[in-house]
Image 1 (cartoon, rainbow, N blue to C red):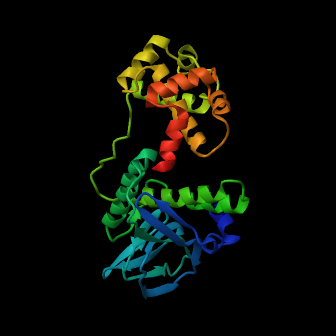
Image 2: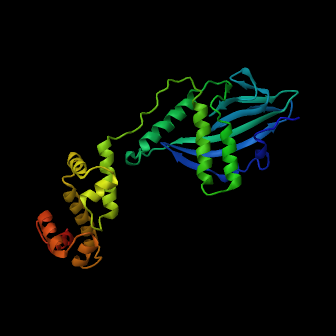
Length: 309
């Protein structure tokens, strides 16, 4: 009985992913997928010496053959892979008695000039992408064993395209990244993972508190209510606000409400009394008192001054 071939589904539309024109950014690099498909060489088939300007990954899921790299002939077998390019001259040949299948990924990798946006955690991503590219560049020019199962991600990408469910593009993109990452891990490089960014417990609690305030400042908010959402005691939350340099809970809440009202006021979104109530102040008179204490002038004077500037 013939052995089942896990990648058989990819023979239905072998060039389907190639036609998508996939481009994406990962960290500080741009990636353009030129090919991501399954191909088969009949027994004795020779692909004469050639090279590519992009990175070309060759995975052997079935069969055997050989490849000539840098003047040296290497044997290929099921479960092996090698990387050629950019600019690596190579010649491939299937065994004279046995066909050889190849999962092929061509990716153009371009460094980007934009800096990382650490506010959104991109610095960690930049470090991972850089480590991956460095690992690919450090791979020896010879076949290696696919010990991290990069091959399986070809099938993940193909199934995502075939099923065409919501999120298919993201799945394919992540599959391409997994293929590259798992190939790069076989490079003989010191393992120096980028330290995961972490924050202190109190800093984390402070971020949760202010996010809840920003989402709900228009309604009546109390210190106990916000503390319950964390959840911690009111006393703990008050201390955290002071530790983080935000003053008291009430000071922060009123300051945020005033900032939003000033923006709405300059945009002419309504009478001041109405804006005060819509932005969480219990009454217009209390708003006027808080505003004057904060800015040393009335809202009308503040608006006139801003208009002049």
